[in-house]
Image (cartoon, rainbow, N blue to C red; front, side, top):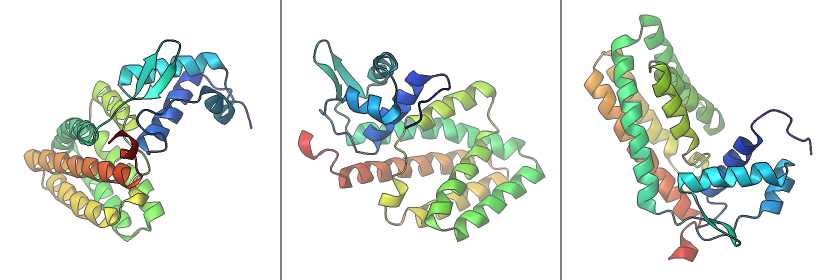
Length: 217
């Protein structure tokens, strides 16, 4: 395995473990295997310890002196609540897009949506990202930073485990597109907030289907 040579090894650890937790690969109460992380990422113990401290501050891990780090008890409500918080920020940005987008940006958003509607599931995941990135570009710099942080802190890759996710996303995206094209800020905000709420429910369902809560209940 090639050793990671770029900076931010602790950030690599954070992203790796966070993704394992939020995809349901690590369960509540499970001890974090630091040797396995070192093997997976080819990093030393120092960035691993730094990364686990960050995840402890995020509330994803419980760190006990002399015992190690364990996956925290994360409830279904915690997952949905995080998405709804994300939705409040994303909804505000969608409202900004509705009032600031140029004709070219509105046309690009419509084009991405058409491609998304016709895409395979694998391609749809990329287009879904492009759709939201275009809208998020309407936000001020610090708001974009906050959105990126919230995006990194939500379950990734649950779409393929959620039957019907694309058809629901297509309908939600159409509502968002219509509001932005009509320059209706309130409708854009509400549509985006609802979209992220539904994504939170889907993420929670995907974690439940993976058996994430079986050992803790």
